[in-house]
Length: 111
Image (cartoon, rainbow, N blue to C red; front, top):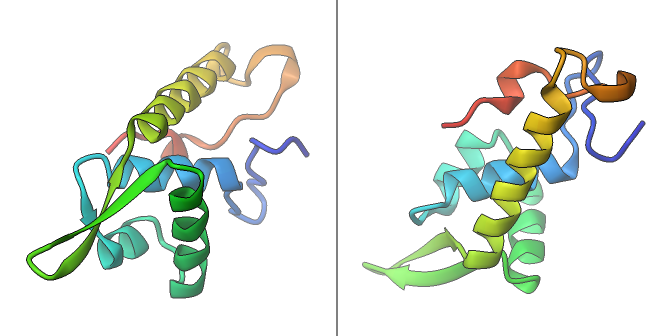
């Protein structure tokens, strides 16, 4: 299985799809709990992703009204755009080019 595909039999998402989803949710800045619920992640999973994304500069964290707010950085938005472009490219002909599996439509929706 390629790192960007989704195993449709077990409904698992790959890490890049989850990162893209977190970035989409946090485009305009949002709270940790909102990311957790909208991305359907456990608290432990969310903390691991946030730690990684803060470390590599895809997310910024700041305090607003006493609460931690997470927002996508320029680097994160660039990743999100490129991820979307690759997803669209692979979506051609319904099954993707060269017989490559693509994620199900419900995971490709933009919110």
